[in-house]
Image (tube, rainbow, N blue to C red; front, side, top):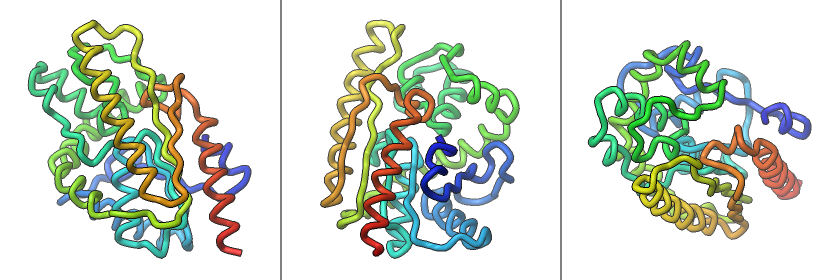
Length: 247
């Protein structure tokens, strides 16, 4: 996916503090903290605005907060199945075992929340790159995910302060395929959450006068794995429009 977008623009991707090879950070892990760290990272790397921001899952609220704090930096956004700011994590996990709850929490932070919704199974259908990450960095990532989960309500409140995206080009991608093997009781809950997510995604796209919302019938929440080309094309569309604006 990154290499595909790199064919037409400069691409910078990173792991938030505490994930994979990135060093952990102590203290608060709310959206304003994470947006501030991204700003510092871009500056230290010598990258200069303007930027097109791309955020998957919980990265959606995070790029919204970055845009709120640094509006002049951001000329376009691509939201990849972003977590709605009104979503309330943990309600179903309270009914799970301690182990399943911990894995579910970590999975949500890695962008996998819909795969574990209402599920007590440990053998989740993760793509191999995610399984490898869990094997190598699981305990470390669980700790930082706990920090971010503790701040999730505040992060959503911060993201909700972004009331408009103005005339920026914005693409919101939604995955609409649910896992094939969900039991009937879990399927109904997953369908309700999916409908909620799609409504929230449409409203997010409408925050820009040039926003578009695309529902991907063949993709789960893991759009970067299921349909990476859809992300590349969304980035291409936003970058092209932003470049025309800069001329």
